[in-house]
Length: 156
Image (tube, rainbow, N blue to C red; front, top):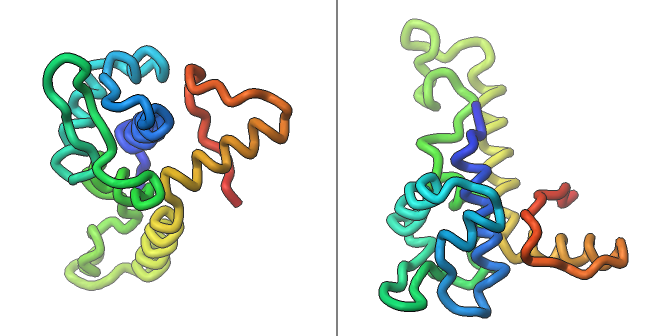
């Protein structure tokens, strides 16, 4: 199982979009500059996020992207699933045919890990992370600065 740069950057970009949602459509150049992610890479990611129904594109002057749903309704598992081909710890892709058509000795271990990871990420929404980030910043007596790159923090 690998959580690749695609998945990580997709989560960061979606968090940036959620942080700036009150300003209307956010263009990818702004996200690229704030988060230091290549614009062409973001364009690829947002194509996938749009096809998955997580964002909508707004054309014309002042255009860009907006979240398709409230930040409290978009979970991290859906973002990663849209960006990644798969997030799977099994060798067989979950088909239980890892060893000559039969499950390998550790198939159940990895399959259960997949379920645990999926359940964990489905339980965390963009809003949860934004709330945690605000709490974290306030507890350190810092003002939340949406211009700083997003840093993912431990939620548990």
